[in-house]
Image 1 (tube, rainbow, N blue to C red):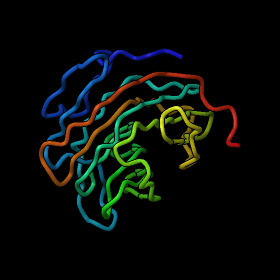
Image 2 (cartoon, rainbow, N blue to C red):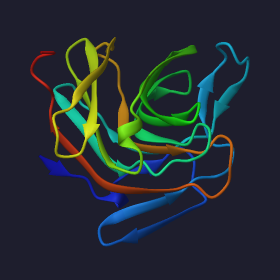
Image 3 (tube, rainbow, N blue to C red):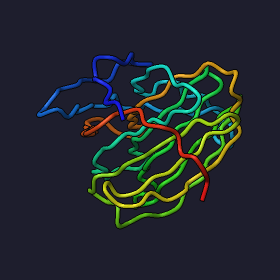
Image 4 (spheres, rainbow, N blue to C red):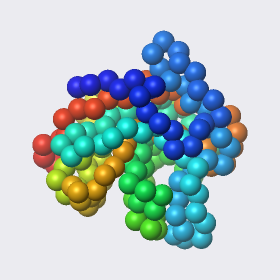
Amino acid sequence: MTDIAWSDGRWTHDPAGTAEEHGDLVVTAVEGSDAWRVTSYGFVHDSEHALLVSFAVGTAVEVEFTAAFSEQFDQAGVFVRVSAERWVKAGVEFADGRPQVGAVVTDGMSDWSLAPVPEWADRRIQVRVSRGADALTVRAGLSGQPLQLVRVLPFPAGVTAEAGPFVCAPTRAGLAVRLHAWRVVEADGALH
C-alpha cells in the first residue's frame, strides 16, 4: 500500500477551493461541476474536480471520503480518465433524496447505474477501483468494513489512464467534501 500525497495529483478542473486539515483534503466544488456525456440529458458536462495520477495495470486506486451530501447530485469517489470522451466515475451520489452507490461509464456517451445506500449518509466511505488486464472492478463500502462489488467493465490493458479522487456539485454552490485517504494498492485478484 502506498499513500499518495494530495500534492502529487493534477486537477482536471480546479475546484473553488481546497484546504488541508489534519492530513485530510477538504475540496469545495464549483457550482455546476459535473461529468456527463449526452445520454438522455442531451448535454456534455466536462467540469468535474478530479485529482489524478497515472493508473497502471495490476494496481488499484482507493479513496476514502465522508458522504455528507444533501443536495441533488452531490457526489464524490474515484475518477478514471483516458480522455475527455472516455472515463469512469464511481462512488456515492445523492440522488432522489438519498445517497446512492454507483458508477458512470463513458465511451463517447455516458451510462449510469445506481443502488440506494441510505445507511451511508454522513459516513466515511471507501471506494476501490482495480485495474486488471482487460477490466476495471469497482468496489465500495463503509470504511473499515468489507467492500461490495459495484461494477465490472471492460478496460483494455494498452490504454493509458489516470485515476484519483473526484468531487462534483451539479446543482449547488458550497459543497465541501472531506477526502481522508488516497492510495495505490495491489489490484483485486478475483471477482469473488
